[in-house]
Length: 201
Image 1: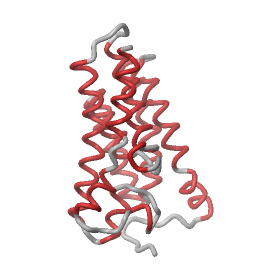
Image 2 (image 1 turned 90 degrees about the vertical axis):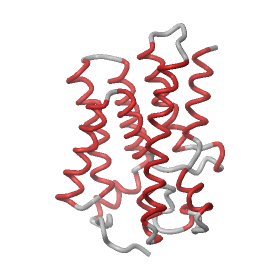
Image 3 (image 1 turned 120 degrees about the vertical axis):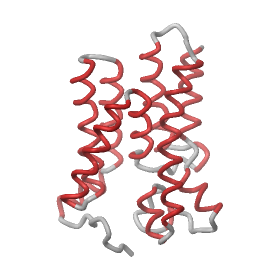
């Protein structure tokens, strides 16, 4: 019963799409209707409203961290805490990708996944963030940086913990992020993926 509560709560937390909420609050277009049609900070930035994009990024990241923190602090159950935290980590990312509050039209999960990593282990989160920053700086392609950072997270986790529930959770999240980036992968292979700073219709 406690496990079901952890999964449900984490999923519901993830289902709050800050791109949609912030856009409505700031009277901006629905981020699912322009640009990449992805309700995430990068797409919100295409409106030119940096504050809206920043709030989206912070909110989506915070909810990932919060789901893990809440599970560790208040939901001690039959499973070891690290196992429950790992389940919550995956559930909150799935909630972001397929949010019940927004007709299951969610984002790709990058910011939420970062929040999850910071909640599981600060150094893994910082390592993944640094990986994203390095790839984004040199190649100027946000989606590629996100995918490489996602794949790097389970590697960093195995280096720290070996075979561990956190490593498994990071691996599952990496697969989910790659799945949600299918269109970006096709664009990359076709040489059509937009670079950071380039305008998109």
